[in-house]
Image (cartoon, rainbow, N blue to C red; front, side, top):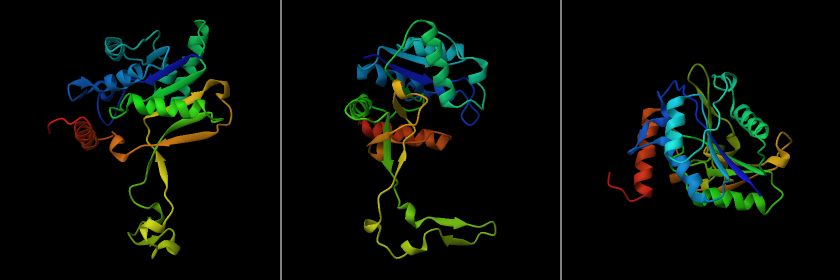
Length: 227
């Protein structure tokens, strides 16, 4: 059984310039994704898909391969992750290499752990699921959400839950946006999705400078580093 890890990392970034290789506590942030993948011991290939020569050089420095550069079609603002993955799978087939399972790890996921990558992979293998990824519980019950009108007035989206105790409401979860496992035998078909639940300290969207600082604080907390 052969597994490939694909780390998408294009050069353009609007909100945080050079986001994928920006320094995160002493290393380019992409290094954490590469190292977690390598330490998991699950992959026959850990590769970075990029259109940027500097990112490619850093990826190779930390142990990833960059056998080809990303095309212009998948490096623009409108290409999605699936477009990138399709391109990578196709290019490897052209090189005579095929894989059984694919794990897409995002370049800005410094809180990812090899253990969670392995846990998700085990869930994938020991079930009829075709896709597995980590999820985290919403920190506040979504059943209490409010709709805000243009004039600033608000109303309960689900008024029937207004007086319900938080502990009595169903738990709901959302995607962590860090990595995804796929069985390539079902690639392009309808997916049967499962998840592993992770602690919220392992999850942080990184879209702003404030997000970046919060991620650094969480990393320090998890690794017993001085603040």
